[in-house]
Image (cartoon, rainbow, N blue to C red; front, side, top):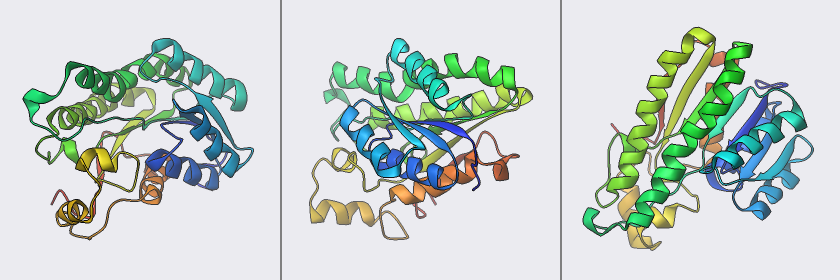
Length: 248
């Protein structure tokens, strides 16, 4: 019960790493608002978990939706303790010059702007309480980029820098800001990263991971739980690699 009585929001919580984080948080005593742009996915995860999870549909790239999701979490469960900015998108692997402007704008909106929008709302609330944790989902792509994913890589490098900058600024207010760097995982984004989900392409990706498997939602749930718990009270500004040795 490392998160007993904590109130959390997990964006992109309807599938993949987000769903793994939601399940672990509730198992450890938290109450969680499962936020996803796909309402049915959020409802499925929340229904599977029980009364300590509630579903909420939002587009995290929109300021009004961001404000509404945070208000909804506090109305349902009480003052927010933990914000997990997990929602993310990518573009298909392709040469840099062929990535369309719409794809680029979507990556900026979801992977970067959403963190800014959420911070504008939660930071004043966390400052007033002199506590709170923001966890951002970065990626090994921000540390050791793969070719043909340049703008996705760049967005995750931005997440790591934003995490470190916020950590330094907000530490005096009792607020911790941390990030996770997963390697490619068994999530809906896997096919996007690879371009095609074939045995050959999986083998190619797995050959770069010393432990020899993709990350699982449970792996990210376990790491997120530790970083957001009081056990990590002296840890801020880190981007913890959950990558089976990919970045070594």
